[in-house]
Length: 178
Image (cartoon, rainbow, N blue to C red; front, top):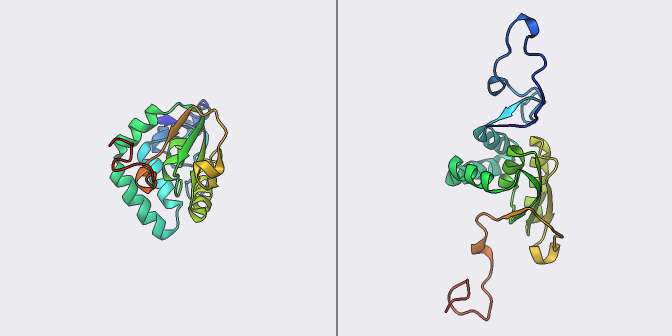
């Protein structure tokens, strides 16, 4: 569990009683609870639910399956491997599922997602806006065509390598071993 905003709980004694712990309160940032409010705590599973709810219906099903395949433990390990702040590159960002997740877990990350599919980039931008990951940006193209300018404090790509065509000079192994 990671706090989204490190602000003191200044109205803890309001109405003469104790407020419930932040993890039990519904986000009051928006009526639908998608954007975290100051002081809210966001758990990994809640971030996944918010991202899935922000997608169109067919993509929501896809996201639910993708997040189930990757499992919370893997997402937590990837989250811990990336720096808590700074510029991060997401190669093959698709609908922004994982870049939005990483931004929700550490809001001081500025993630640039690159994907060759323009429609997926448009959806990723909308999801980022909806869930409050407004520091994320998405560009349609490949790393070669977008040519992102570093430095980046972290780079990740999930489920991408099988989409990369083999180099014509290589025989057999995609890593160049014969």
